[in-house]
Amino acid sequence: MLTTKESERPSIAGQTLRRTWTKLLLSILIVFHVVAIFCAPASVDPASRLTRHVWTFCSSYLRATNLNHGYHFFAPEPGSSTTLEYIGLDQEGNRSFGRIPDKSTMQPRLLYHRHFMLTEFLGSIPSESGETRRAVLQAYAQQLLKQNGFSSVELKLVRHRPSSRQEIQLGSDLSAPETFTYEPLGTFKWSEK
Amino acid sequence: MVREVIAPIKNSLVSVWNRWDAFWFTPTDPLSMSIIRILVGSMLLYSHLVWGTSLEAFFDDQGWNNRALLTLLQPDGVSPSFWWYVPKPWMISIHWLCNGILVLFVLGLGGRFTALLAWVISVSYANRSMLANFGLDQMLCIFMLYLAIAPSTQKWSLDSLIRRKLRWNETTISKSVLANVSMRLIQIHLCVIYLWAGLSKLQGEAWWNGDAMWLALANEEYQSLDMTWLVSFPRLMEFMTHTTVAWELSFAALVWPQATRKIVLALGIGMHLGIGLFLGMWTFGLIMIFAYVAFVPSAAIQASLRWIRFGSQAKPTSTAISSSPILGLEYRDRSIRKVQDVMETFVLISDTRSTLARAVSMLANSHREFVAANSLPQAMIIAKLVRNPVVLQLQLEEFDPACDWLEMRVIDLAQPINADSENGFELDHERSLVSAIH
Image (cartoon, rainbow over all chains, first blue to last red; front, side, top):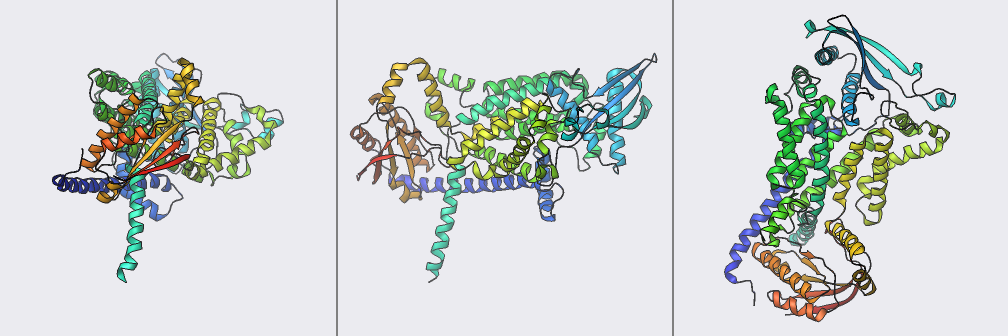
């Protein structure tokens, strides 16, 4: 017959204690983690000082683990999308036109989407953040020059707003010219790194 | 007097701790996490193969994710990634080495070591290619962290195959506390994601006036199917807009009760399939659906797999099973409660004496370990069943004479077994009660 022997009791008690402490430690880690992942989206503007303070406390952990996300999908509302058009000039003086992202050349769709995120990021930079915007533009231009062997590249930001329901009902379509706005961003050369 | 005041507080605290303990630390079958490993690991591998088509463009210091630019954007220091230290000539080799590790992870070879490496890889790629990331990369990093915590290579893996070939004791791959912790973390994280996705939409006018769904579908850069014909159904789009917000806001509350879980998850699957179909983001849509596996108990998955197997292969057996009542025996050992203030519940279900004997033998092993280690293994052994409580009772007495109080219920499982958010199983239908005192 199997019985729990008296001699086993101390070791059982010791193991119970160890397990309890392990669970307490794990519980602390779990609470920290859950608070951190909750605070990441809560700290996105508009945010209270409290959530920002807590986020500051957790930010190193969140960034290191790539958990620092807002989860604001299509929020506050679906809006215009941003793409980039470019005209490159190679050493022989030939001009090439291109667009980022481009569904016709960027396959599979995931690759297209990753390029789309690059231009969406550019479009999300507030106009007052001059230095950041310049740095992003130079980085993108640098990549285009390198990738295509251009000696210079002219960039244009394209914002495309979704057509309204009324516009579609009146016979317009999603690619109607009036739904696009263009912003010239300048010409970039190798020397402008 | 003081004792009268303290006692209820103490009881409440103990009750809270017990609930917390049961929620987070009840050992669970790692099957769900193993399935998530295969699904998420395959998606991660696909994502990395796509990275490979433009590796230099996205990961070179002078590429889209320019080193100087990311340093400027992160004044407190760039997010950690091994890519910061990879010299350009080694990039392709390192990339294929990473893909090789991801293949091992999907196949389930190398246990937690491979899982940890796969997590480091996923985070390193995402942190280095920050500007090109979107929801898919976020979800991959989230899942990979939890898959590294869980024993996710214990089932449906080369590890388990090797274990079987070497005839290692099957009890060594029993339920795991960390499988439960990681499964709970996925569940909680999903709730956080949907809650904030819903709350952030409340700031936008279009989500209130019903235009948002149209605006999303009319975004030409996203759309993969022309949905402008929906302009003729404005009320439908407004309904979809409001339903999306209501669903996201209520997910965290409604996904837990058994009565609403299936509805909430079905709506989620529909929404994410829509994101894939209409907005072209199949990868993101699918990865979100993969997360729902965390809400399906392993035993329910096993039951489904058994049903599929018996349904397709053994029709006569299947008919025989469905024509007889299905009974189980729930066993509670109150003696354990005296030692450590917990009560363990086991369910034995079997259809033959040999299966029953094996189940009892496994349970006995588990229980001995339980008594010795004071752990909380919840040994639920599910098989098909026979109605022979006397045999079952004798077997129980044989394997566990140490317990001084047994409560046994014969349970009718003819009704579906419901997944329970806390214990993985909930047995709804009791037939009779048998008690035995040793």
